[in-house]
Image 1 (spheres, helix red, strand yellow):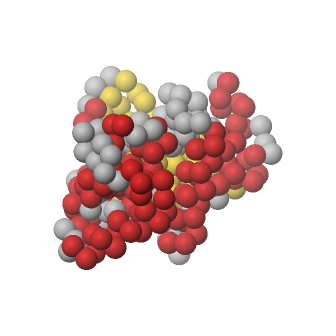
Image 2 (cartoon, rainbow, N blue to C red):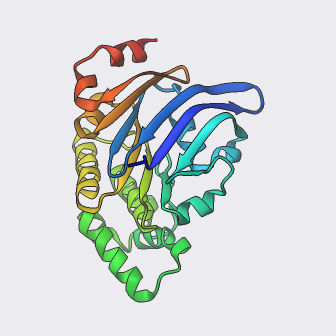
Image 3 (cartoon, one colour):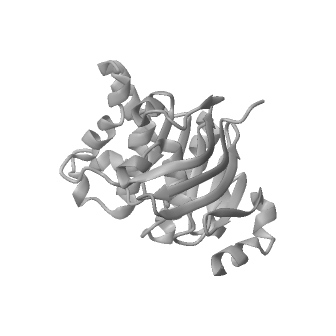
Length: 244
């Protein structure tokens, strides 16, 4: 069976001058949780944005390599069309609409589907099932919710688009360990119960490896090591990449 996502030897440059990613190759199989690990500045976020076609907003460009999603070359695809095809990114820092309520933020994620009222209602019920913390906060402005709740809003908003693959950037950033564990447990539940695939960029390598099926360790814009998550937990590739 072919992979859901294949990235081969990509190179990314910002402002026609800064080489951010020089040689990244990775794959995500259907129904997998794949972790992209590395220190700050290693190229994790840039790799995700290359896939979701959000590089242009930051004057970035894919200068070499190939990205295929569901067997199709998407290197020149439109970001909105990828969302309609089930590829959705949750950006680093949550990026909630602070002045909108929790529920309005969630509803924004369904915009590309143009669903009926009945479908919208069912979709919201599904999000509140996975994120019960949000139920009591549904009418609260997102800017008045906690960091953990905002991360749940961002993931829930992505789920409203009915994704096949979610690109999740630094889900643990700035969160207490207990909340981080709760979010990762929900990620695994979504993967197990609905078959949603995840490619998640994460600095907290030990935590990510507890939940991922497979992982890639990157440093200085290139893959240093990769393998089954349980194998990487026992190896030395992590410390080498974080200290390079």
